[in-house]
Image 1 (cartoon, rainbow over the protein chains, first blue to last red):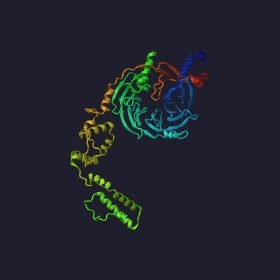
Image 2: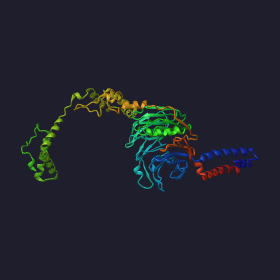
Image 3: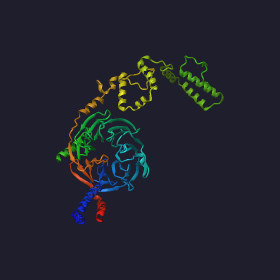
Image 4: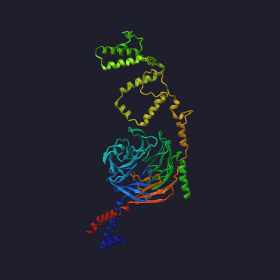
Length: 312
Length: 256
């Protein structure tokens, strides 16, 4: 660093004008270089296992990491822009990108690109496989929600597939997607700032079942893992920056959780089924005990809690 | 074939005959007429079916008894109809035809909330009976659902365990703490709506992406690990970029 400064001084030493100009260039340079840093744009665990993590980056690549070993297993290309959403379906990893494509990678094979889903026109920001693995739901900045059949993608080598259904009732980008655990064909979607609604769909027919205006940007949606409850948690942006818990068929508000000072961008569910982690633009993670405990998991999660207490 | 034909059958259809008898007679007549000239397959089939029906007199009797319940005379029952509602539906259909285009477009533009409101209003006004399809004449007494069971909240008592009202009560009594259990710092978390930077694994490890780095927070023991940093792994390309930007910025000044 000293050398660079010294060189600059030497170069523009006769005139103070040159020195200041070079300093200015130096600051620009730093700003530009800072913008060149690659960033992580999406993370997704392999379901059920917990040893492997898929990482989507801003240099158009999807990386697969072994967490226990701490090393990169493989790096998969196929996109022309940053990879902003990831979803697993057994051994197939679907990645959505700003180039508006969704690419399915078979992570076991050398030629990893199985098929390409083409239907969006802008950045794909929401991506979720249905629990039975038959349908992929994708939301994008072009205000569309597309539903794709798994059967169509598994046929041949690197084919382009069109969506089975296009749901076009949202008025803003759709990032929040959640498949209901208690009914096979029920999907909940949430729209951005201009839309502010949560909509429920029958994914077999594409008909809308319900729509409610939440009053603020819907950033994330999550169903209660407890089937009997039929509750859905939503995270919101300006102006309350809250989390809302709703009862499903009636959509009555059970609880509002406030605390974040900026929009709550992401939600993640703990394996115990009770705790939910929310990540906000105010640069904090908050852990909430939101959902009820199902009778099956009660004993298990208690043990987990005891472990924590004994260590602390 | 012709032997199945009852010889005592009168040629003129009497009003006392039931429908199934008349039908059979017509079938038999058809069969005989076709058989006498060219025995076609169709005629054969029909006559066969006629034979089988005469072969089992018990079943024929039973079917006759069934048919008696709904005769072919359509007499509507006044007690099952609501004359006021009827009048409303009849006049409504007339006015709907003469509706202006404006009003119709307004109807289409109704939001689901107002639609739902109109529906419930209609139900309330009509006394709890939802009329589907607007049938004008009623022939049988309709079984009406008691109003109490339609409104789930107002059930007085019910023996059903999985009752809707009870379940709502149970969930609302559950305590949900309104304060977070724990708060962690996440510096450099991108404020970008389009990214997905958070995921929790089945092994109870939370992965968070902060800028170029992925951190793993183990929820069982609270330890934090750094999984990867993109700046470090792509070191070569970063230096190339650095050099490129530096050269581009400095060149005009140096050669000035």
